[in-house]
Length: 457
Image 1 (cartoon, rainbow, N blue to C red):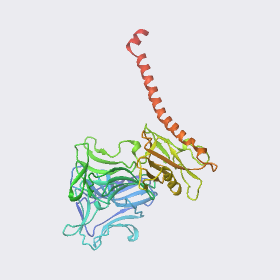
Image 2 (cartoon, rainbow, N blue to C red):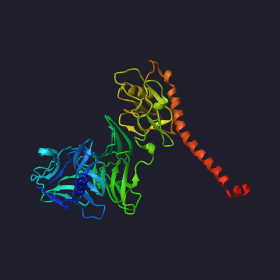
Image 3 (cartoon, one colour):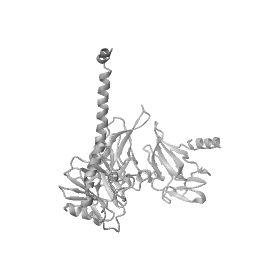
Image 4 (cartoon, rainbow, N blue to C red):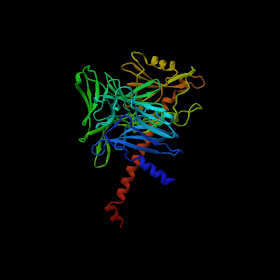
């Protein structure tokens, strides 16, 4: 059984028909395992570009996923999957996975009984063939070589060299085991990274045009990400820090960081040559819910410093929940902390108390940030992106909690004090360990110095 499975996998990873294009009427079928095999991946490579390694390849894939088998059309750059038909919605199938370019010009993924799980939607548009370009763009073209459909118009979390993203388009990344997602969006007034969670949207990195200019589109070149305004005029650039040509831009699924990548022949893999966010505490999900990222890049949990039956002992689910339908809530200010997330739910020219009341009145709000100079109020649906700040007099960060025994602020005002003590303890512990190590090294050095050895002898 193991021998047969090994042969099956070798067959699937072999290039079946590595031509530069596929014509209408083409069909290929992959068998789906009858029994469940954890971690199973089977691929048939259909097309590849005539380039030096790493080159682009197109594959029909069957992968074990969440206890079932998914069927997808994928584009690879070397071993990196740079596009997939199943990025936003998986097509699960049994028995077989079929790729067909129909005689009517529609590219389809099908399962048993002609069940269509994905299609290009190009039926009746005169499509003649599927072609893989040297840029990694997979295109459907007609007899005049006019593009009727292309993967570049359906970006995932990766942008390839030569690809362009226009205003109102975006890259999207999905962190594991989270209902939130990241997005890299191009707008006329800014380019920004966002954390999206339900109805809430927060930016955590951005570039704004100078001199009231507007952004029109961005394009990835061999030297960096070029940002263009009206009339194709380049107005900004995110430049690579390496001389090697760039191959792709990626919005990282795990961190939400945006990076530029080149291929290192010496190491035989892709390396980062630019990253938008360089500090852990500036990442949107640096800590778990209700965590504070400290000056030492460690996470301190707000829940660990509270007491009472309403609070758990870790940061896994958050400190604030179950507020809808209740009126026994209040806001608490955490001293010396701010937030890397800039909420899209902003009210300006109001007082701190009004800001607190806005969060109290919205049962889905869990925290608020008040910017003192501009009198801006940012509301948050979760306690994320919180970090220590030295600019403690510029902002005030408040969280919503349940009142204890129906009492007011006096009962729970110790929260401010404890937050500072625990956060300070985390930093102090790091300093203590480092200082202790230094003292130990000095003592060890003196004991083992030549003079000490001679005197003792």
